[in-house]
Image (cartoon, rainbow, N blue to C red):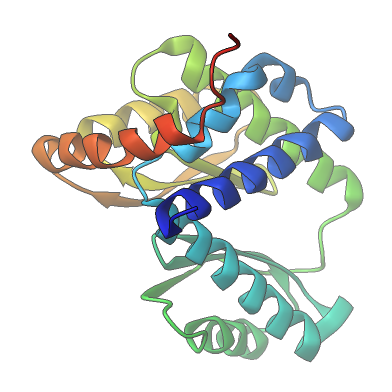
Length: 220
């Protein structure tokens, strides 16, 4: 197996794992997305290598933050194209700044968007509702058909929806409008990397062969 195929196989496994989590938790939106969600995740505009690198950056950042602060904070580090988004709650401004420093210190992180709130950790009920909102927003991306749903990643924290992705300005605006009008969403924050339509089209072509390799062969 060549390195590119091996990378795609790893991405497919990661996609399958992420899909299983909301299904086990009973999230309604996951059932709406269905089996096609794996292909959507694999076919975003990141290369398979960057996709896997982002998973590693998240793991390292979350691990370092947890090692230092444990249950004193509730922090989610989300990496997209090596840009790190920090969401959650911390008790003080000093800890907020230190958590950002920890995330920025992870090798290969290009930038950090620190959206941490200075507040008590959110409840289990709030976090469950956030997962439900994320599922609803993703499902509405597909239902509305205004843009390719696979190019936008959704993170929800205390009813605030953060949108990440490598997108055109038109795609960004459409995604914000869909998220803004989804029930339960209190606010929408853009964390996009804006590219031209020409660059977006070139990225789509670049990831298409990898997506095709990841699909199972048709039955004979």
